[in-house]
Length: 174
Image 1 (tube, rainbow, N blue to C red):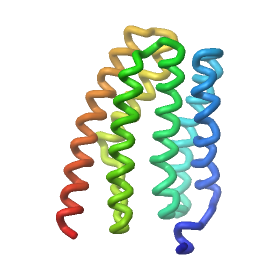
Image 2: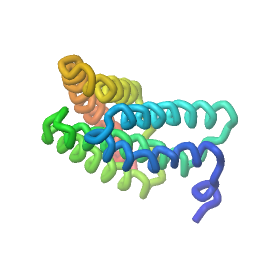
Image 3: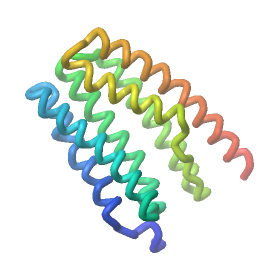
């Protein structure tokens, strides 16, 4: 394996913390939503922190570029699963995000065979923030949280189409 894929640095450790937080978040939403939200907010903070540190101190690696979106997906899926188990969202919302992420990971795996990694685009980043606002809102203000979730799902579909188009463009150019 190449050195660039194996390089561990503080940014990678911070990114991996999100994987560690995913299971407690999923489990706690039904049992103690305030603690779950605290862990979710910590995970969101570490997402901002690892990106900032990677750019600021030139600690970006291919490994980090692979792990960061996977950690994002782990936190999102854990949070939505927890909200579903707490009866705050319907199961079909969790299911469509799982399906979208499965398709996205399949596409990313195919792209990796050609050593291409699609960077996050503005649509994906806005969608991630909409999901975050929805997750934080749902336990306290369900009407607003569901509205935000609707916007997030709409953004998710638009971003997915954008990424699929970019994937097609790259795959066609091989």
